Image (tube, rainbow, N blue to C red; front, side, top):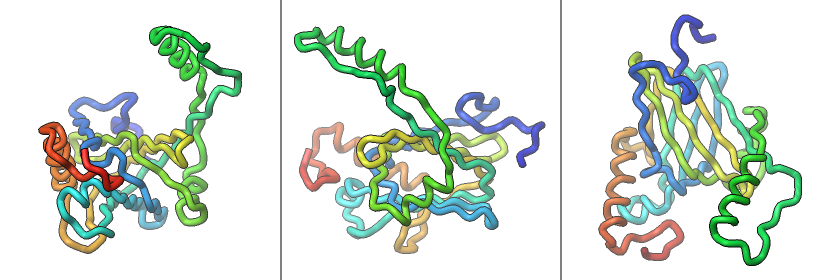
Length: 208
């Protein structure tokens, strides 16, 4: 277990000096295609398919990017469950009324912790999709790493994954040396081109 005297690297109460960095530029709309962890080796491996980066940077079609967390001390998954009551937006409601009703409906959803092992097993037993809607990480002054992923699973289930580890490394599935900084740069250059209104191949093969 982690030393109780050391501040816990987490988003609810980040310790002084912790730096938060968004991974949205490189992982937004990515698909988490494989998730495995090893309690004995204290590792977690997350493999992502990011088609729009592959197309834009003319990388091999089947290339995946892999985050390997070492010295894992925490692995959690939270699932958001809909409020079971009836919900409908009345016909003719104004935009403001619709927004208020929807916000009130969302406020009634409940977050519940679910089994990490059960969630992880889905990637090897069930044909499902896990699309990243947002991602970020924290690095403490001592170099420890925390990752947070917000996922849409099978198009209708919201999950949030958080992991804490001693270190992280990023790999390409083809074995070429890589880094987290380079992955972020790939994403930033794509979105810079997108903002400049260039014709950028999108993940579904269309052009924006």
